[in-house]
Length: 462
Image 1: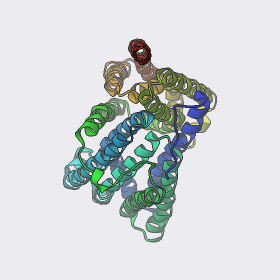
Image 2 (image 1 turned 30 degrees about the vertical axis):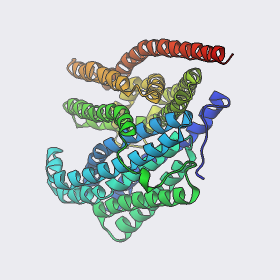
Image 3 (image 1 turned 180 degrees about the vertical axis):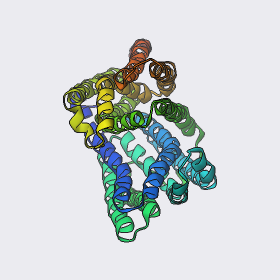
Image 4 (image 1 turned 45 degrees about the vertical axis):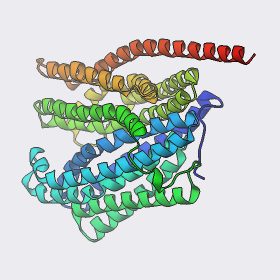
């Protein structure tokens, strides 16, 4: 039987911390997993291959946003049914997820194969990098169904309180990818094509291992091929929660492209400096992202069990743990930012600008600890539409306009430009605090109704 863990019992903070650590490690491995292709190609292939892998990986990430968003929704729906101990609905949710992700994975694969040429052109890819970029996207596109399958398995397990087994799957994919990258790119000189094949093959093997694992261990509830199908109630819940997540992720990526266009207008050195800080911050955010994913799964189970008070405690615990790490990340960035940034660039001019940008940007590490874990809380209850709304409001009404405004000021430096990031996140904090009060009042009213119903039932029995 696959490991299952009820997140509705025991000490809240201890349970959350133990459940979140595998999430954080998985996030770290996935970040390293994504960097391996570029690192190996950068060492053993041509410059055109480096450009192709860099561009192609961004395009493939955009293509996989739908998978990631709906996979997060499956975790929430499974968690709610698991917390409510509704075994039949767990089976139907699994069946609906399998059917949905099979169709979505195949459609994404077909779209990317057919649209790879115009997409590469829109991205203004250098001429010499176009052929390897097309090869990279083509090969990676055939891996999208495996990405969908792997993510649906992991989301199901996480919804049932198992965060360790998905970490095992990620580790397997990471090891296979590294070994194949070295063999195909270094030893056989296959460049971008080899890196793409290593990625797709690793994803496929990880998915195969996940299927074998579930077949041997079981799920702990009845499930057979008859359960696979488009069960409308479960599919509607997945779409209702997942669609706002997908839209949010997609529009956020578009906003990053807009901000990049604004920054690029300030010169190549400034553009490179912002990119370097972005790489560093993506690693600094890993603990908070992992913790917020754990909060979402834990809140989903407790919502299903009617334990609203425990869900609030999980959110507070997530903010506390992430906040401590966020403060540490900010202090390290302020005190040792130059040394940290040297890991990503040796260009002194780029480094000087990057240090200025990091000085103001780093305060976002503290604010996202609040926002991400509140998002996890809201998503766990199925309120993903609000998380989409406030994130897009902060981005398109705060970060983009401020970035554009600051870029037009005379004598502006990246220290001032970086202020736009924490300011936009602060907008999200304010909106989340307002919505939290509203949600808590609703749950308090619901809890009182449940108490009154129980009292009435006791009177009728007497």
